[in-house]
Length: 359
Ligand SMILES: C=CC1=C(C)c2cc3[nH]c(cc4nc(cc5[nH]c(cc1n2)c(C)c5CCC(=O)O)C(CCC(=O)O)=C4C)c(C)c3C=C
Ligand SMILES: [Fe+2]
Ligand SMILES: [Fe+2]
Image (cartoon, rainbow, N blue to C red; front, side, top):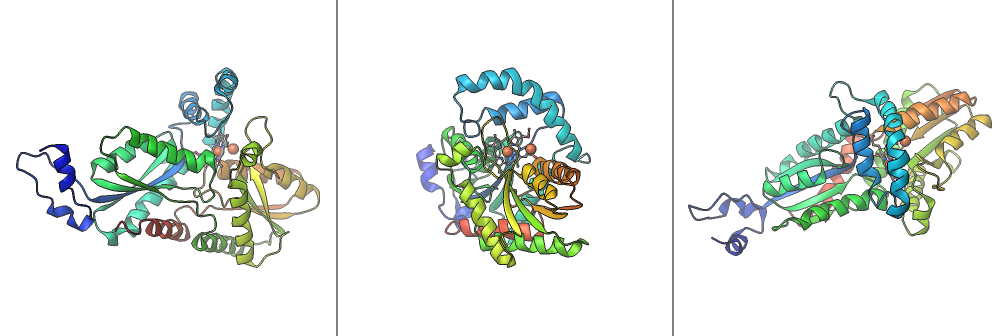
């Protein structure tokens, strides 16, 4: 039987899957399934120099991340950055590493989100498969998309786990997914989950996480900072909607909490390189607040679906230290939604919505 015939016989609807009739000598064909692939940013395999260097090299040679011309960027990357940053970042990862599983928290949490989503979608039957991947490091998008396809997924929903769209995060996940399809003879249909920065389920979950944390601590923060990962300002000037998405999330959260503009403010963290990035900067802001006499603050990271280096080390660790060093007294980090019930409600709602018409 040739491929054309096989294709014609393949069922178009899931419930027809078991009715595929093939000649006796035909190799088994799995078909008719639907895949969901959660994708997060990435993870090194370890905190030593070489695993860190491999990870950073993959990350920082992505044209969606560093848009400078290769002729300008590569001498700096290979001459300086990849010689110094692996050690510095490796030390930072060491502080937050999940020693029990020997992996980064981002990897632990993303896997758990995928497992829990699989359980939550169990009412859809065995023909819906859920898996997870990383844009940089392992498991790669290519390996997991290929596996889903081999398991018979003719339709795959790719979910970049970023509430706010940025070309350097969302688009590069989608690019990589479609690049993988470029190598396939028999491609699955692919859908991507759009940004969910203003999804009511997401805003509700963030608000509930703020309220729960504030009820748990023994002080009332004078200011709550919504700290987002930054991007170079030039990317915003070229039309990236990321800044506007961050502002909108914060406005909706503020409205949902019934707070004033001074109680919940926006900042941007994790600057990289010499360019100007989105402002105001988180580190400078916590320092200025403390110096101006603010004693108690909380920081939430609405732009991260999972806690990671940037939230656990840079905010819960470094930003706290900066605040206290400049005269602040109480600092609390509000955890990301992670695999909490609220966090999973957000992921599940988006997946069910985006699967519509496929089930
Ligand atoms: C949530 C959105 C993110 C945006 C936007 C983003 C843009 C961006 N990042 C870099 C450079 C680095 N980021 C690093 C880590 C990192 N970044 C995000 C998310 C966004 N990045 C996450 C979730 C993480 C943490 C990964 C983890 O395993 O915990 C790093 C690596 C760590 C380090 O050496 O500091 C770099 C480098 C750029 C240049 C950029 C926009 C252009
Ligand atoms: Fe980043
Ligand atoms: Fe950082």
